[in-house]
Length: 236
Length: 281
Image 1 (cartoon, rainbow over the protein chains, first blue to last red):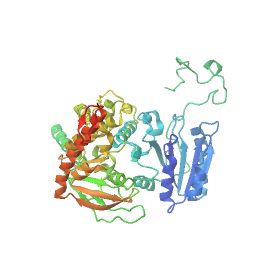
Image 2: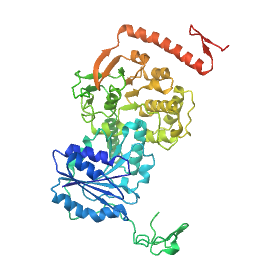
Image 3: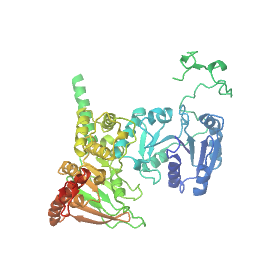
Image 4: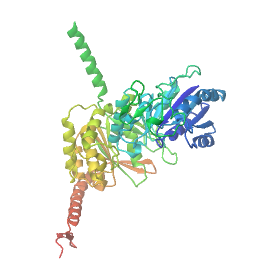
């Protein structure tokens, strides 16, 4: 089974891209799809209705969505395999941008819109810098020069990323992506590892304490004017 | 020994650079399909350096889709399923996907930039993308842009606040000097409130393949080939006729007259029944 992990900010065109991929492969491969979101998601229903593929969603709710992703992905790979899938697509809402959902196996794809702003690639951190492929969408909305400026910015964040520019609604110029998916390795359930480093994360906020101000908390503390415990805080 | 090593490396590097810089001998468009799924009715459209082409047809006839196919060097993977060949063969991935090696600069109808950077930064990043290291090109681009528009552009302005005319002027100058590509695609340059005659003079006779999508008869009559579009497909391909060269000249005179009247109206003057310009009573 091949694995795609697709990440990107809301409205970047992730689902439009997923639909093109599913449309392209649905006749030759059995596809399973998992959406990880925080509050609401409809993609699973849409894709199941349109293509009749195996779909699921999971809401992270109070949990950080990347944390939720790590928790459920093991079971999800087993679920897709049990369903006989040849291609498993995981779509993740990119949220706080601290982490990236990509794994050491399969393909990690970041989706960025042409109109998302010139500094976005830098701000998105690991979601861009650890991706295998960056897909730039909505290219019909901007000039060629502006597209090339955005692509250059992505390249400067991640020089070796494979860049693909598309109008995901029409599915233009995606042959290269399909080729890379076709050539990607099968995943092995044992040994799936996150590519990026997770954040330091055992603190009173994580366990639900609501009071504001460092005096009300213990664990990893940060004041407005710098850290209290320099040896621990790694936020900057 | 070290000297020799250096020489070999240097030669290899030069070969690599030459590989990257494509010598364009021809561009070929192979037929795709119209909106009803019918195959387009032509064998191929062959374009050579120095050739000017206009694409005409009503709104929605597929003009922009055709130049977008060229810009993306479509390989049967766009909505129209057309193929575009460079030097009579499918282009390498490097040419399709690396802006520094791409032989095409396109001016779209967009008159808005979303990038939150200044004109100077925008041009500098684009120059990096196109592998240009000379700083002088940036100043020249701003200078050229100012020849196309009456509203002054300077490099400290944010690109997001430029007017439609300023944006188009800047992007055209950028395509000529930073894109510096052997193929230039222009989508309805007449719509932007810019000096289109200056633009046409500068880019014609440049030895490049220049393709205009246009509703403007002056531009359409000036090009050597005309592609007529209908229902998402190429309907006809015409060569410029001898008489049309003369017609184009006369039409420019008419066009200048219209421009004069436009400027006069803007300046608060009045026009007589015989199209003369006068002061209001």
